[in-house]
Length: 238
Image (cartoon, rainbow, N blue to C red; front, side):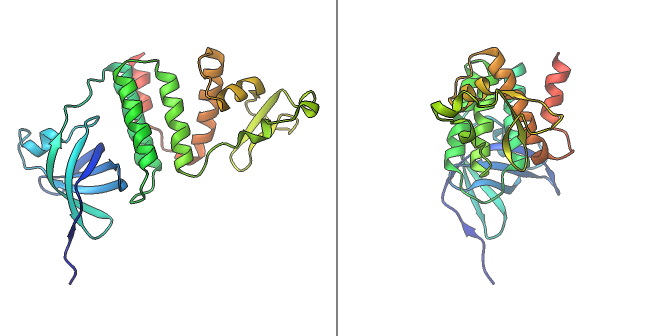
């Protein structure tokens, strides 16, 4: 009979936790080396239990894990930094990033680049930098990680063709960006805005609105009919 193997020390962020069996927690973790993983942690019955107190979102944790299947066991927290002091809209934005990862990231696949993007996004939220560009940049990074990045190459027309290039484009889940001469009764996107988005120029408020609308269309079929709980927080705070 194979015994559980102890894994190397992992640097992780807690994405989500919920009660699991008696005095345990079921955790969704984002690991620098292992990607999105599930783990069980015995946390005791007291809220003052050190492991329970250390398992906080937006805190870099170094943990010891063991196991041989898809559900690991968190045996020890070797080091835990204090959670980033996010508040109000910045806190809700952090929950939004977490929920996207839990809902969309496949488990047990290394995603070191996305881990770096996640860490950077949290750092920017802590600094209370403008929220919308932070969220949009992370969404693009997540799409790339999922192999679903938007192909903007259809906008790259040479100078001879550019004069006749359509001014507006649609986004179709199965096809990507499609010129607006395709008959669809859905939102159209300004080509100039799409070019700015492609180049990472998100300072213009109108470009940001286009980017947000585009991301909503892209993520809608991926998330399905179940609404994001984190979006409700934004609604309640208004």
